[in-house]
Amino acid sequence: MPKKETIIESALRLFSTKGFEGTSVREIATDAGVNVAMINYYFVSKEKLFESVVEYRSLFLKGLFSDLINNHSLSAIEKIDFIIDQTIDRKLSNAQFHHILHRELSLEHRPQLREAISDILLRNMDPVKTIIKNGIRDGEFKQVDIELTLTTMLGTIHYLLTSDIMCRKILGKKEGFSPFQNKQLKKRLSEHTKQLMRSHLLKK
Image (cartoon, rainbow, N blue to C red):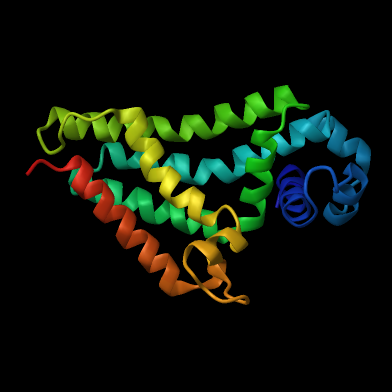
């Protein structure tokens, strides 16, 4: 694995478990088996390294969603189903990092980092917007507010999975319930969100 990618993997692991504030560049360097100078050479600052981690995590979904646009074997609603499943899978694959990510988005004392993170995440939404636009154009979908449709779909997923405590209490589960390892919850959330989007998007 190239050194730059090794550093990003180490940063992802440490940011996920210790948070942005709790992780030092020196710790990342030690974990990656490099010196601090190499991290500074590639990334300049811890903020820029965090941006690179977000970009690294986002590239996978961005590629999948972009490929969907020209996939003529799937209907528009089947593409939305696929996006829902991939979003849930990605959210659950590293829930801790997503908690840190959304915390950084809510803070105001690192405005440049906040701006960069939001830009990266919003770029992933461009292919999804195109898929909805195409569904409307082709007569499969109703005329809907595309931006608010996205917030409805993603908000349903993100709100439930923002916190294990909130998730447990919303679902009325007992202490000890672990939502991020629960296959039944994953299936339930997927089916509900798909049903929601089908009711909202599909013409009768």
